[in-house]
Image (cartoon, rainbow, N blue to C red; front, side, top):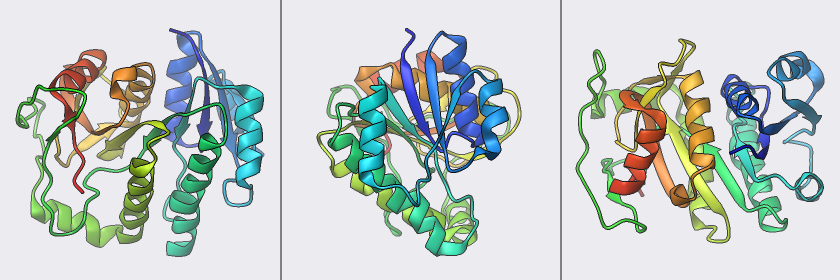
Length: 262
C-alpha cells in the first residue's frame, strides 16, 4: 500500500534501495542528507532530497520536519561509515539516532524502522532466537539452504568485533535506547555483511547468524516490515536466504523470531 516515508541518511546505498522500492509501489519518499552531494542519486530513484545535517541539526529541527511532512514512517539508515574515528561514529550512529528518537516522541509520527547490524550483544552473551511477546509460537533457528551459509560462531563474531569495535558498540547503544522507548512503534533490522549483488527477492529473517546480504534485499525488507504492524517491537537479523521476502516477514511474525540478545 503506497505511503509517505522519510529516510534519515538518504544518500546511503541501502537508503537508496529502500527509496527505489517504495517509489516503484507508488509511495513518496523524502531522503534526508547532510549536503547536496547525493541529490542526483536521490532524484534518480524518484525520491526528494532534504538537506538537514544529523550532526548539526537539533531535535526541534527534526520535529518540525516530521510534523510538516506527516510521514507514515521513518527509516533510520544513517551511519558514519567508519569515517572520522569513534568520535564521529558516536555522533552519527548513536547521538544522531537519539535525536531522531526524541523527535519522533515529540511529533505526531511514532513509526520507525532502524537499520542496525548483526550480532549486537553484550560480549559473553551468546545469541538466541527469542519468542516475541506478540506470538505464542516458537521454533528454533534453522540453517539457510543458500550456498555456503555462514551460521553464527564465536570465531566469526570475534573477528567482526576486532575489525569494527566502535561501530558495533554505538549501534548497540542506539538499539538499547530505542528498545526502551515504549511510545515508539519500532522495528530493528540487523543485516549481515552488505554486498552490491542484485537481490533474488529472498532472504532469511529473524535467525541469529553471521553471513551476507545484498543491499537491495535490505531495502526491500525495510519496506516490507514498515508496512507490517505486526513487526512492531521486533528485532530481526537479516541474511541472504531462500524464503520470499514477504513470506519471510510473515514467518518471523508468526514464529516470534525476534533476535534480541540483551
